Image (cartoon, rainbow over the protein chains, first blue to last red):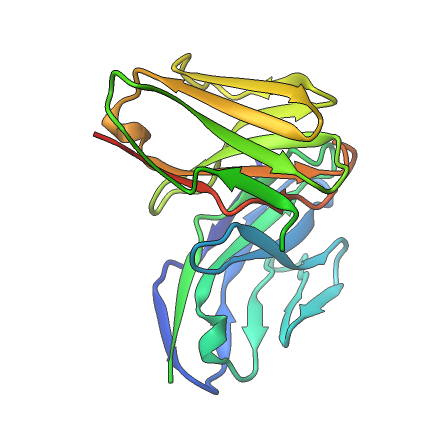
Amino acid sequence: GNSVTQMEGPVTLSEEAFLTINCTYTATGYPSLFWYVQYPGEGLQLLLKATKADDKGSNKGFEATYRKETTSFHLEKGSVQVSDSAVYFCALSDGSSASKIIFGSGTRLSIRP
Amino acid sequence: ETGVTQTPRHLVMGMTNKKSLKCEQHLGHNAMYWYKQSAKKPLELMFVYSLEERVENNSVPSRFSPECPNSSHLFLHLHTLQPEDSALYLCASSQDLRGIGEQYFGPGTRLTVT
């Protein structure tokens, strides 16, 4: 079946550092890929998405490229801020239903001032 | 503002209590969901409703009973819970169930079962 694997946290970085959170997936067909973010005390919010191979999703300085050859969708940001501290979830949808989103276990990111 | 609200935000209940969680979406969506979020585990989809009809029930124990009286409101009725049911319960909605529609989440109810 379909699955998502993301790097375990927590990840702790200093402000202005470069961020990478790894995500790989297993799926049949051509899934869509997402990154969701959960800030403290809040629900999940869609951060970015990509619906086909080689697409790059971007938002708020974050970006991720859909790599079919490596089945990956790594999240990157060039210069993180304290306000980026949150839990990040990689997710996959096979497109059969909006309910069929498979989430990774989440990576907690903490940014030091 | 996410457009999806949940009450209460925090709930402590004993194993013999009965309580209900409430979710309301102000987005005009037709599909609503309940998820369970436990520490260090992936989100678990519990129930899916579309146009007030339950379309998925993912092997959830009967001590959790959902109710969807209309497309804007979703409840989760709780009774005789176990300590392992302590978790963050998230409600979400989407426009409908077609394709890869984005889900919008509420802030969750932090449930502690004592």
